[in-house]
Image (tube, helix red, strand yellow):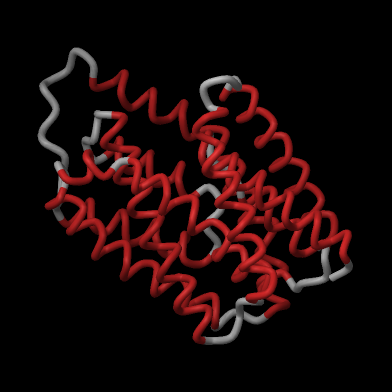
Length: 256
């Protein structure tokens, strides 16, 4: 990559860290920056997994008190999510570049729709619970474990919009407390991202000279994201991310 592309990559990773800290959707900034610099879609996706990991980890660390009160649930969901992440990352290593290029537009479409409609779906689920029979304790049974396993296959394979998918499943499985849901979401996303990085790195799919640069940018964006969240309108940022996701989806469909 040229010096200009490296600068763009660093700035895009800052935006990715900032977006993930405030609203999600950071991959919509970092993934296209990697492909525009000449990386194949497959290598860009694998390298992008490195960039998003610090943001998830920092966010999970901020919720350590909430996680301490959900140890049993985190253990069950952590194991099922870890297995799903291994399966998803393994599937990615078995996917050819040509096949993955054809899948990218559909993966971006799914991520964009999930990001745009996820909060409304969560709110609808909560509204149906209001006034109904008291909700049972959050489930840690087989249905919940399978749900996170399947979501983590997607997270280990691509990952964009993973946070919204996880939040929706948390709502469906009985986690009504927003802080607890955020804590579990960030912890699970950290597990999935770390495992994906380990599997993909073992297969030589991560371009570390770009990945390390993106780690620095995403960490910087994540650290300041929490502070800026108090000043900026999250709805505005969500709208920007959705517009970018829609444009990227259309562009990749056009290219394919």
